[in-house]
Length: 261
Image (cartoon, rainbow, N blue to C red; front, side):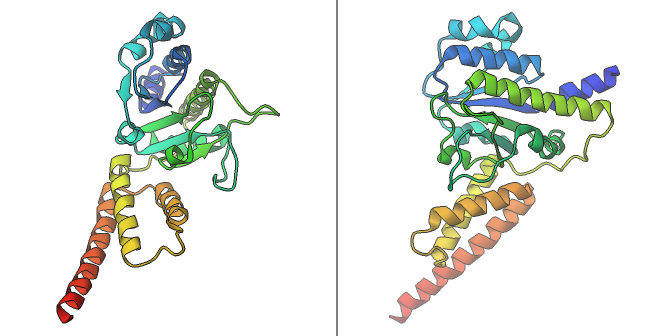
């Protein structure tokens, strides 16, 4: 591989970040940092109340990944942590009627690769004992499950290693073969999307779209649909403008009724 190709791989991998939600063991964070550094990922983000013991994290991060521990980002809320990202891949071992159909990490890399040039991509992992909850998975554009034989639960550090490797291998292979897919334009980030979803929900509730307490069901479907499309910032503003106009019209109707009475 040429130096130019190696530089391209580094630039693309630098667009990705590891986001760990409420990790229980500092050693797993250190192992995750070590894996991230080995695969060219330079951002490690923790979502938890307090930053875990630094020495325990460094013990398994080793000197090679110490800079990730020293510069890790810490947030109290997941929404704040994911705000700058345009694409989020969440991990889940649990299946059920409330979970969407998921694919393996390798199957999803073809959708992630086009994002990397112009969009920040987050690989999202939940705590060791329960994984990501439905409330946390709602931020994800995609959800993946790592294929296993019988025992589906993987150690957090192992899960991070597998996803980092799949992403790095996919980028490396596409660049070396000159088969990298066309890049998608910059998309609206999670901060913009969350504001959109709030606006959409308010508008739909105002016009009586939700029936029989089905708010969560419909909003989940709307989130999945709009999240998969990859809306640009301008498109998000257009949809929010439509919602705003609809809300204004409904307010005018209520005002006119009040005057008539």
